[in-house]
Amino acid sequence: MYPNSIISKLRNHKTPFYYYDIEVLQQTLEKVKAEGLSRGFHIHFALKANHQQKMLKYVKEAGLGADCVSGGEIQQAINCGFSPDEIAFAGVGKSDEEIELALSHDIFCFNCESPQELRVLNELAGKHDTTARIALRLNPNVDAKTHKYITTGLKENKFGINEEDLDSVLDALVDLGNLKLIGIHFHIGSQIEQLQPFKTLCRRANELSSYIEGRGFKLSVINVGGGFGINYDHPNDNAVPDFKTFFDLFEQNIQLKPHQNLHFELGRSVVGQCGSLITKVLFTKKGRAKNFAIVDAGMTELIRPALYQARHRIDVLTSNKPKKNYDVVGPVCESSDTFRKDVTIPEVERGDLIAIRSAGAYGEVMRSAYNLRVARPSVYSDAL
Ligand code: LLP
Picture 1 (cartoon, rainbow, N blue to C red):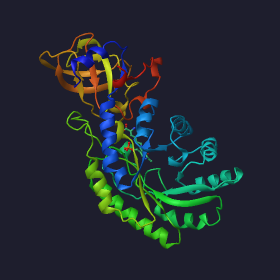
Picture 2 (picture 1 turned 45 degrees about the horizontal axis):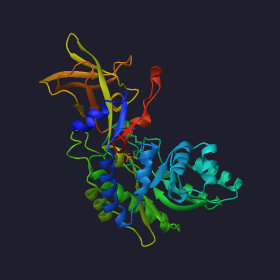
Picture 3 (picture 1 turned 90 degrees about the vertical axis):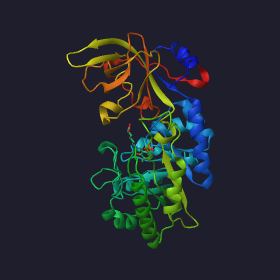
Picture 4 (picture 1 turned 180 degrees about the vertical axis):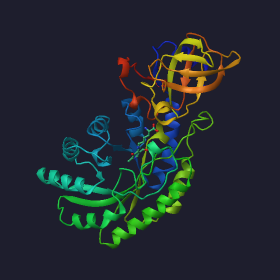
């Protein structure tokens, strides 16, 4: 919950807008540094979680690299000062144009996901008279125990190279002279709240790394991706995720050889808790069975509840009246345009401000123009 001094300033901005608490971001980055970078781990920030220029500036200053999944993200990372040699490029469907952009900047590494992609990358690297450093994204068939839409490491998922294809891929690499295999990459899913899937991932990564090195390749990069979840129910008590436990787990379970470095691609855990979507109550309405609070933000600003049944905490910023039960809904003509059903919050009236919390990751970046809704600029605590 924000102090009154902040709430009165938030009132000066046109809603709905994203509000980023830079102090929380900085505290989070300090922990990532103290628990992750200080152990020699390489941490690439997943721009897909948030690509706001100002946020990237802080992330970069903290010493993180970038994990990009499109030409647009690569360009944004470079514009924001990330050095190409700390940019990884992932994605199951990279276009020729995007590959050529990445090659022209000589980025650190392409995380490759299929035999055909390897052949195309080899050809394009040849055309540019260069060698592309690659990591093979392997599908480890580990259940991340998260929502099915953000599970990526199972056999049936489209991501990564399946184990059955690994031998033929390694055979083919011998003839792909414009590629240099430097590592292996995994990402089993997002918003992973249990530690067990990460332990299983470590075991699989150790096995696969030994196997590939046994076939004569030298892997300096072991990239275990991202996925560390945040606490959506209690963002105030858990503003900074427990990075110590997370990094301890990898330190204890990944067996690195002296020439190997451990890489991560963290998105949500870095920026999730510092962002809120600030919205205003337009109308209240008593339905047959429900009270509705109709707010001016919708699934166009934050699609997570509609898409993944995600539950974001709702704080009423401008009312401390007795509590009442509401469905908090947006203005878009879809019944899925609902932020929370049956949530008990202080009674609200037209004009009250609401913060939809833990929206710093996969919030603003997933905004859409559906219904031709106007996008308001984001607001930062250090420039209020
Ligand atoms: N690396 C790769 C290859 C990824 O695909 C992702 C996320 C990450 C790293 C970062 O994962 P994180 O640390 O943020 O969990 N829109 C969804 C989340 C999609 C995640 C996609 N991949 C949501 O709102 O929950």
